[in-house]
Image (cartoon, rainbow, N blue to C red; front, side, top):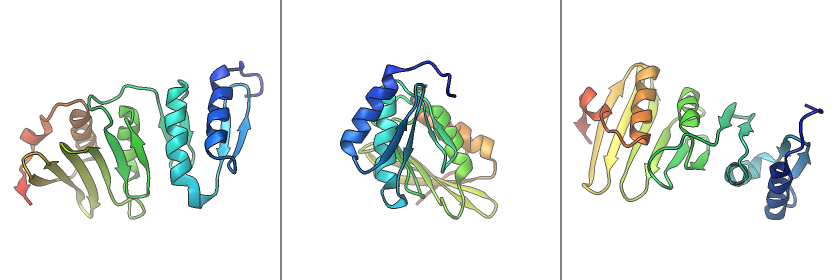
Length: 177
């Protein structure tokens, strides 16, 4: 609100983002900043805004996707990426964001992937009766697929994967793709 305590991190964030994207409108307030951008640059600007917010110890809210980017907790894989079918790419996403982003799967957002490049990934796509879940072990050159009906179980699988626990693989019947 208007009476929020001034945060120097907001000014530093605003300055850094403005230096990268001088054409983007940034309205700085004492306790927060509002970034307004054209749809054609939203994915690029947003990715930088999310990263800069984290660098400046700020929480970031994405009103288009209705997602909050918290500072933590993070997964165990350095440089893990969250990628969605609607263009969202986040390096080192917080686990709450992964949890919430799974609820956005739809025809407009047809997949969500957590990628550890050169190692493995976990990817999901919605189906008429649930979710198609794929795990790829890039080192072994093997892709596995299963079907999950329940969003809570899907969230559990992604939380385990991000935490370095592959127990989800033992709970489901997988086919080699």
